[in-house]
Length: 407
Image (cartoon, rainbow, N blue to C red):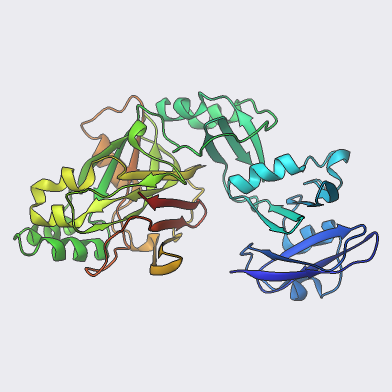
């Protein structure tokens, strides 16, 4: 939700302005009464938390349980108005939260920024400490988000994690050397090595079963989807190689020979060579319902083509880092208007995560690890098909948001 802040302070004064969706703490030296619109989605009333009035950075952190995790950079033209680091002090005094660092967090979706004329505000807050580490893959290199802060890590870390054997993940992460973030040039890449296979499971939610039966009824294939939902053996199919997948912000596609196309939002598992789940990301299994519905044997053509697989925006590390009831939300906008908006949660997933991985690894070796899309529980109706220009946003609680535009 969007929220308006009105900043008004005399020379050298600073205060907290906030409301139902967010907060901002800015110390003004000589500028007064700026209006900024900040998107933060914190979901509380600051006045109730702090009792209204002004507050120091430390008071905000303590009241919100954020520890050291608030950074703010504000500027007007070439002037720096406020520069508060994650330690609660000025960035030059060791806090480390400069305009450049703020831009890193904003690009990765860890903070929010707003411009109003010459006024520029960047606000970052760390996640609570019970949230696992996140690995962000950029063209310029890998960033490890840990304890609310980002660090540069070796480019081979992603491949090492996927190629690791049983029991090796923890040691790899504990011995990984970290460095200072130097930049975030280039695109955000999918968090999967180029030579890692991406597989998918089907008919793992009741909604998916109903949709697949519906699309295949005329061809007489609906009975198969009804049977596989309750069968001991799950439906598994190859989706993509890592090098064919696209990341957050990239374009996805629909087939030119398809007339009915949908995104499929899916929790996606990162599995190492030893068959262990070591992380999670957001997946979009873009599919042609018209081709699959025509004949179940056309499934590979409906599922596997250029631009049909998106994963991102990052890799949430740790088997226990994701809540068992995390929500999965799909929003599709067209010309700025929402044309589809629905959600489910992981309690609706019929099969266990290890159950799906065991079935995949039962008779196959994956020396480069694998990604496993776990099926969709959110499916647009028969009256909807993707169009060029549609913006598809998939959010999974605890991981982040994968956003792609249909080419």
